[in-house]
Amino acid sequence: METEIGTLRSRCTRTGHEADSGIVTDTDTLNIIRMFQVRVRCPVCEDAHHYGMIEAKLGTFQAIDRSACRRSARKLASFVNN
Image 1: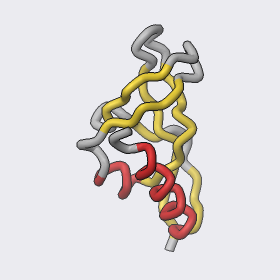
Image 2 (image 1 turned 90 degrees about the vertical axis):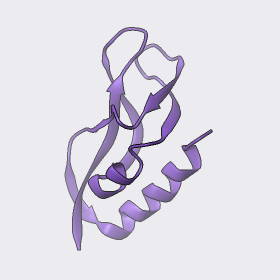
Image 3 (image 1 turned 30 degrees about the vertical axis):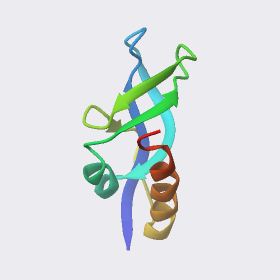
């Protein structure tokens, strides 16, 4: 089964520019984690930001195998609430 995935994107809190977190996830997982926050280094200003997933969106979509999404979801889970 295939699903659409992309990288989590949010606005840099310092510059207001859209920033790619580098975290790959799928739409199903994003809907599940909407209540959480992640702390990532911003590629725009290079500072660490806490992003609320309720504000996040997915970047460019591509079709891949669901098992690859699950591996990305486990990686994302290690960032949640840190």
